[in-house]
Amino acid sequence: MPSPSPVFVAGTGRSGTSRIADIIGQHPLIHRIPMETRFLVDPGGLRDLADALTDRYDPTVGEDALHRLSDFLTVRLPGRRDDRGKTVPELVGQRRYRDAVQRLWPRLIADTYDEPAPAEGFGDADRPTGPFGPPSRRRVVPRYFRDRGELLGILHGLVDTLFGGAAADAGKPTWCEKTPFNLLCMEFLWELVPDATIVHIKRHPVSVLASHLAQPWAPPTVEGALAYLEPIYHRWLAWKDTVDLTGRRYIEVKAEDLAADWPGQRRALFERLGVDDVATRSAFQSHKLANRDHQFDNRTREYVEEALGTVVPAMGYE
Image (tube, rainbow, N blue to C red; front, side):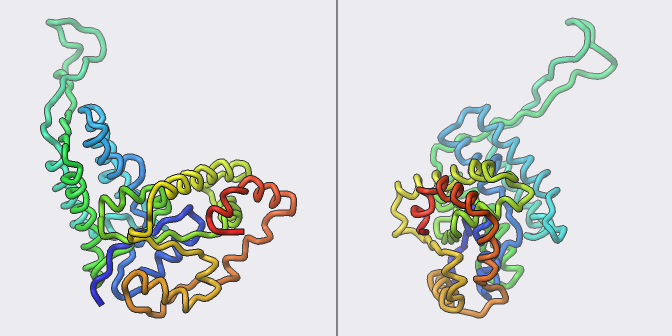
């Protein structure tokens, strides 16, 4: 079969995104980037930069976006390890990562200069404040891209080098990247990788909320989890109402459907991804999806269902 398109996995979190990304990455033609890379859609990443150097451009906004991206790519990602102790640069190839990042900056910067920094302490026009020379700081003049497509092409090149290179190292022609909040950034992801397929995996919102309560990074109370999750659902649904996804490379699946008929649903998933069906080590299992069904007492469950009253049917559940 022809080489499949790159894949982004999206969801609310705790909806099965990790499991389905593992399954897709177990196909012999698709390499899973085995960590949430986050630099595409998180604050300070490529999405913010794309806006800062185009629609939101001014020199200050652009320089700030470059500062934040530099911190993201050179400090945060090399310093953040997954549960196996690996970093994103290690997972895509450290030399490849460093070379690609270094090649990026000259394509985004119009000029650099040193700005004298104000002296600290007492002094006057003919008297320095101490025995050291006047300090300065390096400033950057960001490029303005009148053609947004030109900038997206540059950023696409970075992603293709990193993810495509990692896939090639694994002997596979394409890749799969999973970050749950890809859910809220689909337009940008299709701008960045026009031929990408986005796989959105859903799970019953009440189960999603119950699972959030057990996570150290999520609010620990029902009220807090509702405050966290409801805007995610409403923003996704509001965006979905404005676009026609039938003409997009978009696949929407329910975790519950996958578990109810795993071989058949797996075959359908791979068919929609444009690859042959293969047996995978990972699978969706009904008993694992049902482990949150009795987490709430009747009163709490009624409260949660009432709070999510419009969300549940809008996401295709009863």
